Length: 556
Image (cartoon, helix red, strand yellow):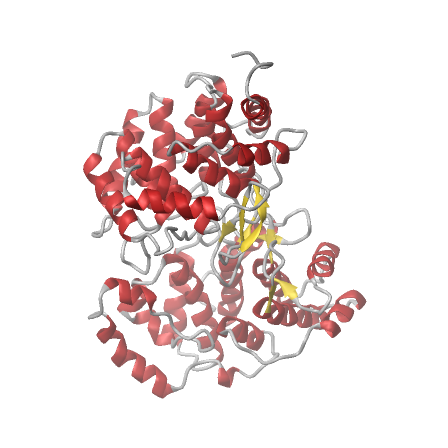
């Protein structure tokens, strides 16, 4: 069919797809990787301002500009690029700005600080940082001894509860955990990011309250042993800032430990996470995720497996596989990150489709098989160790298992996906916003597993169609609330609908019209960290997902 006689949606999609290909190839780095520059967030930025203030540095113009641009008319601060005002971000801003003012008075900061609403403390993390900055008493930070004793009795009893019930149990946000938690089995069962957050905070509490030398030494050793080769902890800015604060305190509290070198490396790493707006992004990058998705998109765009862009990206992915067969979200030279199931599934799938990496693929598949939970799901890191099954992660693992012919593991994953569908037909996700992405990835997995005709698929399609905005696109906040259409969420939905045989010309038209002159789309904050940190926008998501969604239409 010629372009002049093709339906307008197909012709437009073909043109949009060619422009998207050009935009995608333009983002590849010389070493083959793809790496989107993530947006800044309040908690990592404010924590870094606090680190520098307590280290005696003057607040720089970039921080002042970030604070001015992120303070809202009522004096509060937004949590993330979505712009939602956050009480906890506002309280931490008050702590950081007061510390900066005490270190180096600045008229602009003083004016902003005067506009911040004064209210009570709540989140225990902010309480600890406020006490560290001398803005509140340490006496009210640790839990009462009676609460600590009660916790040691209750904790063993919680292990008798079903896994699903235990996953819903969360400690009170206003009360810090006891330092003794570090020595309990419960600490080792926490989600890995919670361990990396808690250890430095417990050290700060211990150093300013009971000051037991053995406890301080144990916590310091634990923290030092987990610094990554690039100087960070977990390649996450907020966690690394907390570790830096802990090492600043340990420098005096545990003088025999060698903290100066690790602290200097941490400070250099934190400086490297600054964004163009003067703030800090939370993760240094998601370059494994970005490169794996970009490789899959290029292959869908009819880029040959032997073409230089695909081969360079695949070689880069193969080179950053961990020795255990998994991949982390960011490639680190030297001691690295704990691998996760999402990046491992996508990287393995990308190499399998690129061809020529049989041994790497086999190791990746073996790693994934070993991480499938007893219920059939895949969680992000360690099944049933403070982690929970995730819909999108399981969907990606299912796709990878189907690609290598392991229908048994894939079938167990699909059965889990069908079991956790919500009553309204949607699925929630942990890492991208939220029901749109969860539902789209679940439906893609069901289609690939030949379950498109089942009732879960029909209910999911109905929910997705009803969630569409009047303009033809899809949009949703990180809390699952309706929002203006975004390129990423529209692309998620379109992929799922097309996989189930549903065409949607209006939605396709919206995606084509939203494309910018350079072939890219506006990045929206659809990525989710966790509820305290908020979310982020990644320009690679806004390029790769629309390209994947347009492929079928452009090649029709």
